[in-house]
Length: 232
Image (cartoon, rainbow, N blue to C red; front, top):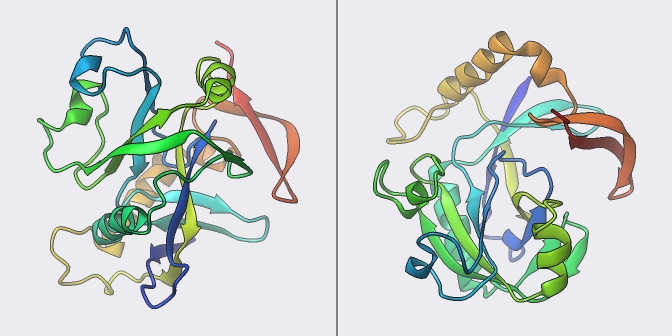
């Protein structure tokens, strides 16, 4: 199975992240935390209500993809995560948001953006989010009562997902030799192999952990699995 590193092509005007989408099943498998006025320690972040905090992009995390014809993994390096987070703000896209990558939303703004730099003392740790160093974290203010009441409070959306334009390249084990503080393609491949060996059946499921397929649905003009939370 091939491994594709997604990179920014800074020579292309459209390269980078256009919007942040709130989704039911985030590809990075990290849910956000919905901060309300009565949240503990909320005053340390904002005295206002309706803030979503979560991971926007995690470096070196293999993400399984299946386009109906081909199965593969994608990942982003630490350097790409850093550049993507900076470009998103320098292009003034912090007010761009969508629902499930399909419907444009108004009233959502990225009000905090940072990269995790410490394993212990990062703000994300205060909220039980054990994401790796280099992760792009964000806090989104929701000035949209319909979105908050109908999607956040009901649990219909659980995390962030980015959307934009990246170039791709096939990575080989020796391509990353000499890169400091980055996982080489060989290390990422070994990580994927461990997933395959440790939980082959789970990997082949069409839905993320905690979800099961219940029929199919049409998304972006394609038939895809309809994933619903597993009832316990």
